[in-house]
Length: 193
Image (cartoon, rainbow, N blue to C red; front, side):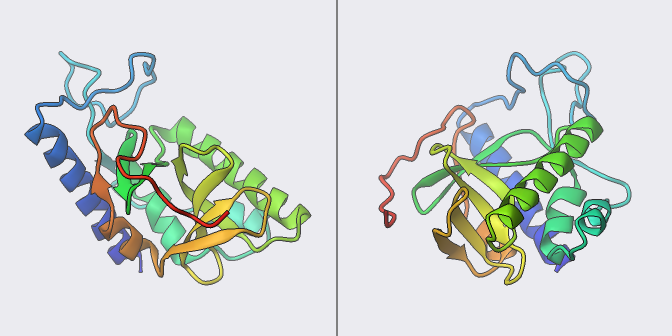
């Protein structure tokens, strides 16, 4: 599973960077993003970045153990592969921004947010999901269903969930790159209320 996730994620990165290049867009960090990261590769242009792979993959086992649960293997690969900047893409017309850590500090913050997310779901007696991407509607998030491995669009704090893909690799393979500045879908998305 880890290899499939990493291959699909690497493919998303490659397609996204090629898309930007075809349109003459230089991939840069947001102007306010001055934090160090191994993603920065050009000393003369420190705003430029590309995904960085860890020499040895990390995982989220520490927080899974602390939460006394087992995380789906796909989430370990998704977040443990390395670091990246914001990747914007479209999933069947829905604009998404993949959540990826920028550096080790960001990876630690991500873990804290995942813990808070799981604790909130437990408090609400909802099945565990682990967030993967954001959408423009802040009350919804794209997550990995921890039990089934399906990728779902969920209404935060509610039982409402829509299955987008049967696995994380399948979801990643269906993403279409959006220009770095794009944050809204080009096509309206019709989801049940």
